[in-house]
Length: 315
Image (cartoon, rainbow, N blue to C red):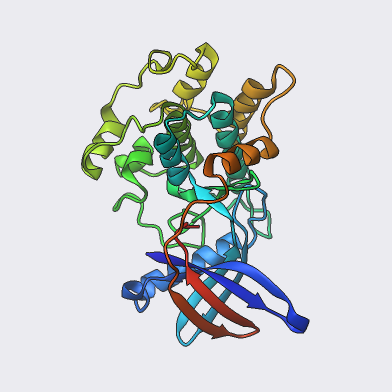
């Protein structure tokens, strides 16, 4: 429902800051429900200030068009990252796959624990932890983005139980079966991300979204050790606990998942860092991926001049 542009924020004395600008696509821009959720998303993420979550700077309106100014990430999403490996005939090192998901677990742990100003839990569930919503900067930072279909008390319209929110091949069994979700739903999705990074493909992805949804509900979770010789007993156990359909057997919190992932890569005393990942991705892309010619877009808002080009790399 949204589209993202690259923009310049201008200030006094020649101040210029490059930002990303998210707007509602034109076909939805006059529908009150979409506008309300867009505003709700901006208000929700305004106070989500964490190194592994894309920062939101500003909610604005110009000529009847609402926009969100966000942190601009120079990098790629995991879909582009994985596609580049396929093009080069390379496999992502096991430790880097675990490191990437550990950073997402850090961001989720922060979001899940977020409270309002009175200390009441917001009950945030992202509901769209997927390859397109996880970014890697060329410096090596891993960022979770797009809380547009998140569930949070008092911020976004929630039709859970009536409609399915999320991408079929990354959703939890609760999402796929129209059930209520909690933070454990995001951990199942994180498990899918980890398995996908390790194997190079998504075990739940099928020809159609409906087939993918059925695979999420019914596909036996494999012994990952038989699919990739690099997956040992401990990593296989982590994957199975993250992908447990029985909520009582799944990780209870992102902190628990984070602990197991970090222990796995750091228990010997040394493991990957942002800098390690940064060197790897810069070498992988040899600079940055090619982008199509930009299309110009300009707009004014209070206190800000925006000069934007449509991005080939979604945020």
